[in-house]
Amino acid sequence: MAWSLTMEILIMGFLTGILGAMVGIGGGVLLVPFLTLVFHVPIHTAIGASIVAVIATSSTSASTYLESRLTNLRLGMTLETATATGGILGGLTAALLSRQVLSGIFAVALVGTAYSMLKKVKGGQPREEVEDTGRLGSTFYDANLKREVRYNVKRLPLGLFISFIAGNISGLLGIGGGVIKVPMMVLGMGVPMRAAAATSNFMIGVTAVASAYIYYTRGFVDPLIAAPTAIGVFLGAMLSSRLAGRVNSNFLAKLLAVVLIFLAVQMALSAAGIQVR
Image (cartoon, rainbow, N blue to C red; front, side, top):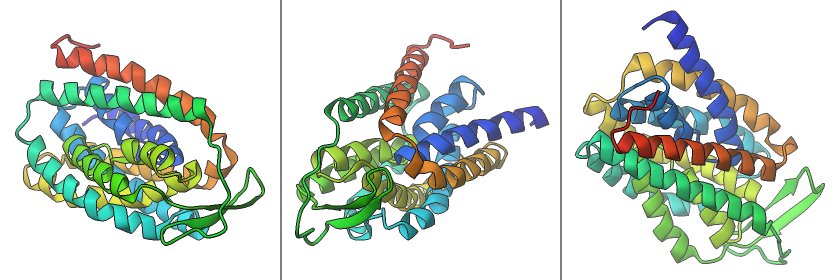
């Protein structure tokens, strides 16, 4: 691989790592389309590289989020039991599907994520303060609001079911599952955006490890692709985790939604057999 191409992949990983860690999606939802559409990497290899990068994202940002008390460990570990199971099944399924089918599924996932992000922005994040956070609720300090935020967790059975689906899609597409879990926690379980993003970052690393071994044993992890991608994501996530509290999350959600819709169109064209240049 040419040195210039390695640097381009590293820079791409750095940029996706910044955005992915800030909104808790891990960056994989952007990595796979960029690797396949821009660098013409086979989609199974791109997914393998994305899973490795997702582990780097989670490992980098998790410690910072834990230190700031944004991560809800009890909720994360509870949901992860369902997510990891789904991740293993998704990894086994992915090897049986063709490039066109995977591209089509990815396009649908991108559109759904963009819709969820825009819905979150439009609806805002009204939050009722609670006296008792309950068994899975928590508190954290919001730097923007300059006060402690207390919240309870609602609809746990729904969260477990959707977490299983998120894990399955994560193993299938290498996108970390955060694209589903963050909107699910915010819209369906009443978790504030910042806490949901931090908890998702903690969870996606565990999910990715569960499916990374499957991709590796099937020969879908190319070190020449995965290494610069993971290094770039690692550096981007490290910077992102320190800036997340200072950036308007609604702006990030809008920007991400626009990028996702654009990539969804490109992936749909690829699924249809139309060459994208």
